[in-house]
Structures are given as C-alpha cells and as structure tokens.
Amino acid sequence: MTKCKEYITNERGSGMLVLIIGMLIAAIFIAFIFFDFSNVFINKRVTQTGADAAALAAVKESGKTLKEDLRDETQDKLDDLKEAFEDFLEQAEDEGSEDEEEPKDLPSPDELLDDFISQVEAELGRPMPNDIKEWLKNSSVEVDANSALKFFFEEDEVSEIACKSVRDNISGAREAAERYAKENQNDRLVDIRFIPEDFRIYVETDRKGQYVTVSDDMLSPVKSESSARIGSPKGFTVSCD
Image 1 (cartoon, rainbow, N blue to C red):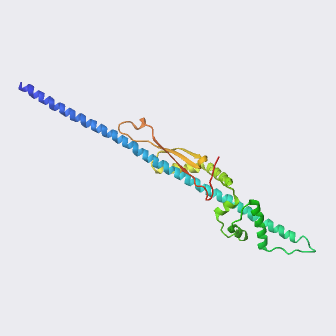
Image 2: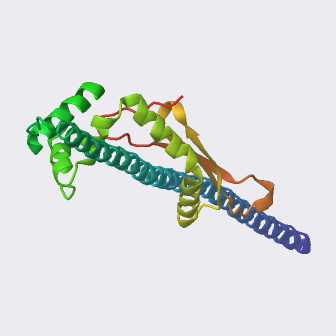
Image 3: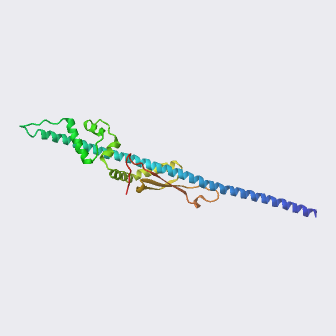
C-alpha cells in the first residue's frame, strides 16, 4: 500500500512537470509568433521608408533634368533673339545706305533697340523683361531664367517641354529610385511609373522578411507604395495629357 502511494505521488509530480514543460513550450511558441508579427510590422515600416525615399529620389532626378531642359530651350530662344536683333541692325544699316544721293541719318543704337523690342513685344503679346533688354546690348548681363521662360513660352508650351523631359528621362529616375531603395534596406524596386495627369512619379518596392515560425520562402515579400509630385517651374502649372 505504501509503495502504491509513492507511485501515485511520483506520477503526480511527473504530470506537473509535463504540464510545466508544455506551458513553457507554448509560451516560447507564442513568443515566436509575436516576434514574427512584429517582424511583419518592422518590415512594412522599412519598406515604406524605402519607397518614400525612392519616390523622392526619382522626383529629384526628374526635376534636375527638367530644369536643364528648360534652361536649354530658353537659351535657344535667347540665341535666336540675339540673331534676329543682329539681322535687324544689319537691315537698318542697309536701308540707310541705299540712297547714295540723299543719305539718311541712321537712328541711334538705343532707338534701334527700342524699335526691335517693340516688334518682338507685339509678336509675343507681352512686355520684354528689363534684363533681356540689357542682355541684347551686352551679352555678359545675367538673365533671370524664370522671367525669360515666362517671356518666351506659354504655359502649354512649358507643359509640353516638361512632360517630354520627364518621359524621356524616366530611366535616370529609375536608377535614382533603385539606389535609394537599396540604401534604405529594401531588396528591389518593383515598379516605377510617371503619372502624367498629376505630374507625379509612383514607385513600389519590396523587402523579403525573416521569420521563425515559418520558412521565409513561404510568405511573399512585404511591399510598399509611394508617390511624389514633380515641382512645376515658378509661375506655371504643368499639365500632361
């Protein structure tokens, strides 16, 4: 009888030990589950940060090339204006020397400049900025890029140049987005698109998670999306078709 009681006591102790071990294993498993859940949220936050950085990098690169393209287009217009002014002066000189019997007094350089400016303003329908007037007399004068842009181009013309610039240089925006996505611990740039109606660039990135309770390959990478608007030139609202 005594041996039976000892056996029952031992069995109770063993059962309690099994219960404690089972609870410990369950607690560890639950801890792993919470760890994996927290990993999901951490990965989501990391991918979102990477997507935001990639979008901003793409927009910055697009804005840089856009600024260069607008500057080149404006410089071409200035060069054409200078050439037209030189032709105007040459024509005025030729007209003054045509009549050898009654030579005419040529207008002063300032008068000729005023006449030319009046013609250009009438053609474009807006006043010429003072810095461009001074530049016609002296090419070393610095011309404000924004005032020249407003003088030479209508808003729809600026939009056309801007939209073409972004579309033509999307590969440069992609490279910048990929670089910043990886620098911010994202695995890859999944997609990048120019959204013309909003003058905006959209990106999507992903990052493969690391888990304890399941194999990493069993779950899809965590993805995040972001977009940013490309800045329009001052005084213009770019609109693309």
